Image (tube, rainbow, N blue to C red; front, side, top):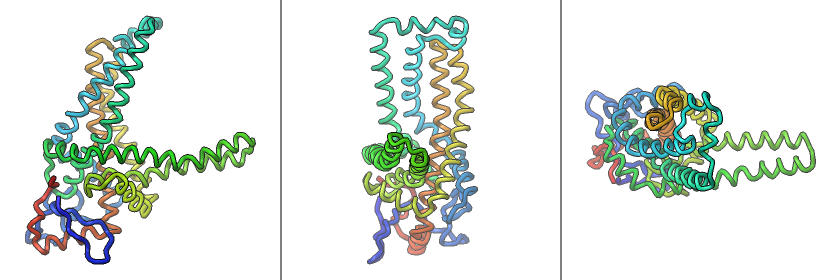
Length: 343
């Protein structure tokens, strides 16, 4: 994917070309291509725009989300369901209610415990390794959808796979950054506890809470930066901090709201399958639980990733003039504006 160089003295990141074709007659030069889900053009967004946009992106490109994310979510949820199946010995909640002591036989030997610990360790590691890919994949689909393109499952998977190491590195770097940000609050809380100073303890708790909340706007735009700008992990975190701090409270509120909405929608749809699976147990319950997990992920992950992606573009439009850059490319009839990401 080629980038248009910024003017001399301009330290803004280059605007990736290939996201919009020249504007046809009858449309303003700043308008997004046909199919853009938000107002037909690139412009700053409010809360309603972001919430509306994340659902419209999901509805518009649902086939791509299902095919692309399903390839990853199905084996991951099967592994997770199998871990729970082994933990319960294939017993469902109905079996446990009828005989509360039934589960005791599952952990009857040291070998079983060792096997379960290993299985859950493998499941946790798989989840850690797959999470950045899933979020990056959903971000890639949302980014193309926002810019009016039609994302394809195969190309989305290929592109995200090429950015996987950067996505994983960004996740790990965000984790280390979070630990570093939390250390002062924990030190303050430790001092307050040892000195038995209630006022200082209150300050420490408030500092801890604010730090956790501050991570939301400062961290949320890192994955979009990796996918859209093809940045390194360090640059992605810096870009996320730079864009996030400029609309700190707005991004915090929107991301929290979008996460709650996505989580509720995903959980409700997931329970339609996972609850009967947990009640029944056995192999049928394993499959139903896995299906519920996949369905929940197919709704919650795209919605949350879409909200963060829209906020990323909103930040670039508000503070870096991305809409003007794209409009200038359209006016020039840039031959590289072919639409979509290029590897």
